[in-house]
Amino acid sequence: MQLYDSKLAPNPRRVRMFMAEKGIDCDTVQVDIIQGENLSDDFLAINPRGVLPTLVLDDGTVLDESVAICRYFEELEPQPPLMGTDPVSKAQVEARQRHMEFDGLMGAAEAFRNAFPGFANRGLAGNAGTVDAVPALVERGRNTVVRFYERLNEALAESEFVAGDAFTIADITALCTIDFAAGAARVPIPDGCENVKRWHAAVSARPSAAA
Amino acid sequence: MQLYDSKLAPNPRRVRMFMAEKGIDCDTVQVDIIQGENLSDDFLAINPRGVLPTLVLDDGTVLDESVAICRYFEELEPQPPLMGTDPVSKAQVEARQRHMEFDGLMGAAEAFRNAFPGFANRGLAGNAGTVDAVPALVERGRNTVVRFYERLNEALAESEFVAGDAFTIADITALCTIDFAAGAARVPIPDGCENVKRWHAAVSARPSAAA
Image (cartoon, rainbow over all chains, first blue to last red; front, side, top):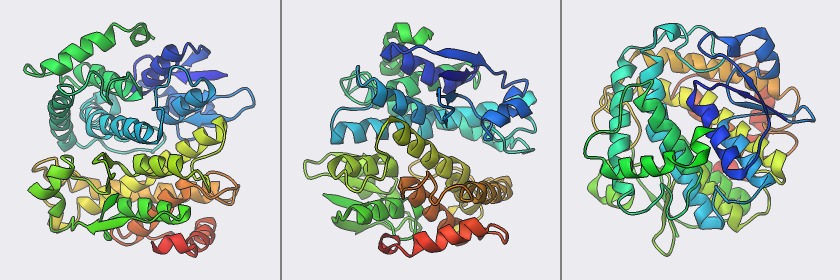
């Protein structure tokens, strides 16, 4: 089993952190997205979509999409459960995970990708050909991230973790979103979002956060 | 159990079709997205994100995000399995489902939303406040849909269904994407994508497609 990884990007970190919470280890291969190694012939022969992370199983099966790779590990090693434990909690964790992704990570990615000079002709992730950046998406993405922080702050007034009382994949997506938003997209946690700050400090202190 | 639904939008159709495949029925409430009923105080009191579909369980639990709602029904009624049956197939179905969503449905939504006059100030779905449409996203979205058709055509040369030999949630997302892309976003299946056309005819003939 081999994980095609990038230390610079938020999505591979989601999988590394998930694996670390489960105590799963595997060989990794670093792929430099900034230099376009994910769009090289060599990598496209492995995954024609050109995205990271990509997991290749020992029998050659290729899996991409962070959440799908996490699903594989959740099924393989159910403990500790990170995707819910019964019909309602599984659905709630999945909903919250997607809220973090759609309401947060996508906004941060939009803000970063359309502002970063190296991606001026790579306006969409992966193997999408030449796609011009759209400058109007920088501000749109930043505004999305601010809304994300405000809503997350309200939610974390009600519960210890993003999807309730237990740490789950939704917390992983949220942490990777925030660290990417605060760094690459330059939208740090606003003053006043004290619940987010409390939660961020606690989750950042988990050993898996360094994976 | 009550499903807040919209007959005009692709995401609620995903859930209706999933439920029909499982033989699950429930009360539905139509919410008119075009008229902005999903952003009314009444609906935001139910789901502050303002998105459809939204499922409210008998105990008051609120679930949104199509895939999360489908997960609930998959757990509740495992037969027929629509999300895989073992660790690898569960991950593969999830990956393929997300490919349909990220590589297809999002492009179609981008093309439609930024061209439709009624959404000139609703550039993002749900409760995102006033967000201007971005005209450059219309062509970008249409190009994404064309790439989606071409890749899906290649994949369907290898397998009967989107994620292999069995009908799954990935087929549901693909069908709802294509019918929305061909209609609202005006990007029909291109000539030459004969595998997509064969598959589309077969899947459209399932009783659940009319749900």
